[in-house]
Image 1 (tube, helix red, strand yellow):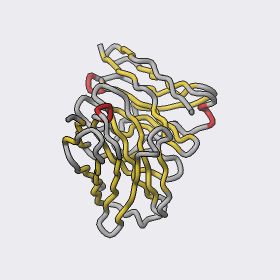
Image 2: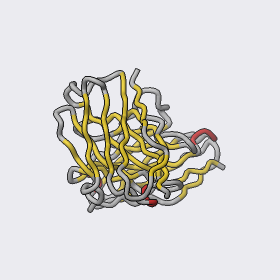
Image 3: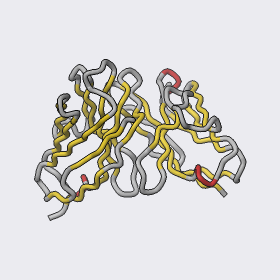
Length: 106
Length: 120
């Protein structure tokens, strides 16, 4: 079965750029989606199909996907961006989630 | 405005069958391209996808759980029902339903989730 690998944690200084990776075999050939989850809340879609932002998601959130790594980039990180982030793909008629990355804003 | 709400028992005993209902508004499962997924999250752990049902009644299941899961829809009531048999304490989790886009399978609107504890 397909696997997605995310770092357990990423730290970023306030106002700087955070990058969260999602690794998978030839993930560049798939559409990758990203979710933000704050404590006690349901996940929120922040990027879909590699690099598209749903309405209401700030332009500071962007995504890319190439070869074996997809990346969620959060520019000008704010305290409110502190959350868990999950990547997701559709593979072989099943949904696969990454293990999640905890973003800490210092 | 699209909303989804999960409902079901908060506590089930081991070996029992869990039945969860997702009641939604703001879209229809009669509309081409619309789907609903169920996802769960054990305390402190990652998201785990369970099942998806499409507007045309296509159904998809988690490989590891498919023998225990059944997903169905009632389009007249705007509801999707998930049943999971033979519940075990490891199935203790928050269960979410989410509207899902058919082609790329992303979940753009989620319910708040319902917490299910499996204990005797």
